[in-house]
Image (cartoon, rainbow, N blue to C red; front, side, top):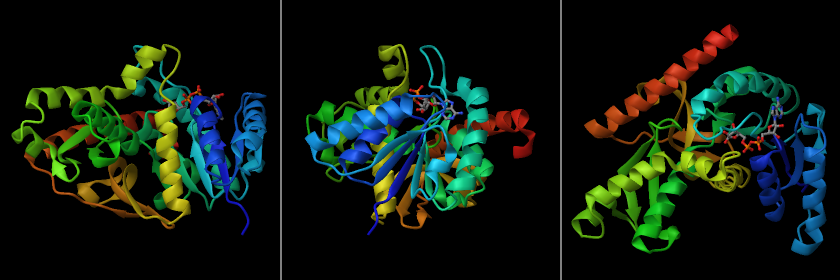
Length: 320
Ligand code: APR
C-alpha cells in the first residue's frame, strides 16, 4: 500500500511541529508549503536528516507551489499570522481571511478529496471561510480547537488531583475564544464527574472555577510567556490526533469545530461540538443535553462566532 500524503499549508511553528510529529509516527509522506521561501525546504530537510536517528521512513519536501499538494489525503492549515501579547484571536480576522482565500483555492484545485483540518485563528470563522473558499464538502473540513482546549483542561485537572492525564476526560464546547464552554458535568476522573469530586472533597468549587477560567485563558497564558508567538506543541499534537482518527478510521469522539446543519439549532456555521471522526470525515455530530446555564454560555459563545462570521462577510462579500 502506498504511503499516505500529508500536506501542511503553513510551515511556521505549528507547521514544523506537525511535520515532525507526522514523520515520527510514520503517518505518511509530508509536504510542507509556505509562501516564505526556504522555510518549508529547510524544515523538511532538517526533519528528514533526523530520520536515520529516529528510524522513521517518510519523504519530506518543502514547496511554494500548490501543485505539490496534489492528491494529499490530509491537509492541515496553519497559514496566517499568530497573535502577539495583548491581541485577541479576533484581531487576526482581516489578515487571515485573505490567507484563507488563497489557501482555499489551492486546496480546492489540488486536493479536493482531502480531509482538511484548519488551525488558523480566529478558528471558527476561518474554518467556515476556508470551507467556502475551497468548495470541499463540509464534512471533510473541520477546525481544531476542542481537542486542544479539552487537553488544557485535562492537564490542569490531572495536575491538580495528582492523577494520570490518561484518566481525566474533559469536554469543552463552543467557539475557540474567551467564550468557550468547559462542561464540568461531562468532565470526569476515571468516570467520576467533577461535581461528584467536589462533593467527595477532592476540590473546592471555587478552585474548580479558577481552573475553568485558566482553561479559557489557556492560549493567552502561552502567548504572554512566549512573547513572540502563540502555542504550537499542543495545537500540533491535537491536530495529529484528529488526522490519525481519519486515516485509521478510528471513529474517535472528539470535540471539533464542525459545520452544523440544524444540530444544536444552528444552521450553516462552524461551532465546537463533540463529533465522531472516521474515514468519512466528520461522521456524526453528537448532540448532548445542556442545562439552562450551560445552554446560556453556549449561546453566548455561538453569538460571538456569529459576530466574527459577519465581519468576514463584510470583508469578503462573496461569502455572504
Ligand atoms: N500562504 C501560506 N503560508 C502563509 C501565508 C499564505 N498566504 N501567509 C502566511 N503564511 C505562513 C507564514 O510564512 C508562516 O511561516 O504561515 C506561517 C505561520 O507560522 P507562524 O507565524 O509560526 O504561526 P503558528 O504559530 O504556526 O500559528 C499559525 O495557527 O494557532 C493559529 O493563531 C495561530 O493563526 C495562527 C496559526
